[in-house]
Image (cartoon, rainbow, N blue to C red; front, side, top):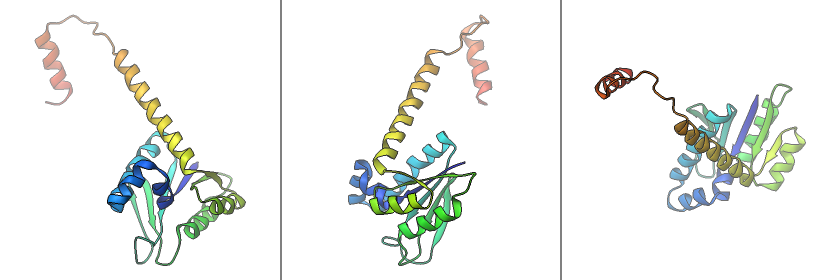
Length: 168
């Protein structure tokens, strides 16, 4: 199984859209990152974990899940890097490919030495944009290839059947 561990604030700072949102409202930027990664998880089937450090959220470590994406807020005075290193150590095995999304060069070297693979914030954004294009292309193709109705019937019957199909 592929596991993607994301350094939340690092990615927010690296992506133009999220960086712009961050200047207005950090919570809004976090929510948008989570929304994007929920879509990524649904498309790829990968396990996705986002780590936010205690720089902006005080208190004990907390975990929650949003539509299958795991979100970790580190405990006070613990950096996201420390938490990510701990996660890599516990997740990396022969069954898992662990990828860490961060543009922090020192963190990339550290997780690479622990057996995880690195992906920069920019590379992750490129992958997500590519995924979005693929989804849009697939949707357009499905619209073009709509099945033709093989049974000829008058419009009222077709409309009634469609209402029943949709449960109306």
